[in-house]
Length: 265
Image (cartoon, rainbow, N blue to C red; front, side, top):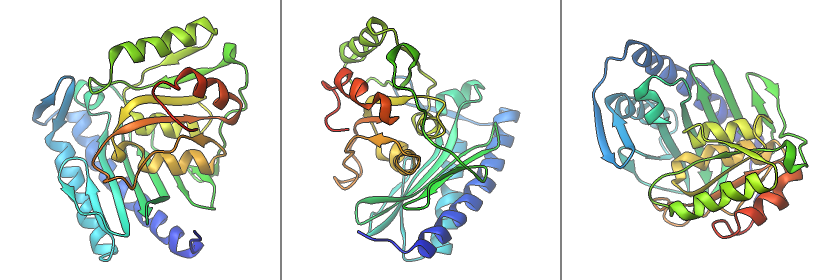
């Protein structure tokens, strides 16, 4: 499937502007600590800032692109041929605890194919963006995945939630240690994917993750030269699946390590 570069660039630049403004507002609330929190499940939280941020992003994108649809984590939505998949605050647990590792994420999926990805980290003022065929940028500079190919030098970013078996998670960690690799569990899958694209992590794996956490990151990683598993974005968009993203030199190792949870790669 081919995409018009001007078409994709227009939407990428618009999403950057929207997420930057939304991120500035969310950052002010993060610093002030003035917000209410609700619990959705075990270690699963939502703040009023999540909902307000999503509403702002949704309204902004639909005003700019009325023929595009929006699916958000907090308020759902409809999915058309061109759908923005939005996580208003990925890493809400970090956000509500005052930990500065969270982001805003928006990915445009066209006919089931991830085409535009924008992730903004307000705490570090880092804008990660990519569109299909255009490469990946961090604050205007091109970035690539790492050149790591030795497990004893590798860092795998790992996500976890209680929708996945604890035993599978622990077995992957044990396999990392046995090979001399290490892991980080930063608590925001979308931002972790952005860091894979920028070469900071050598991979990211989670046994169960929702589409709004990966829609933007899939574009960032692939456009930065990385390899991602076949995440079924076209399978209803409401169900979670495993995800593995990796720098090329570690893809075989990480795929073998997580093969019980991730197929493909």
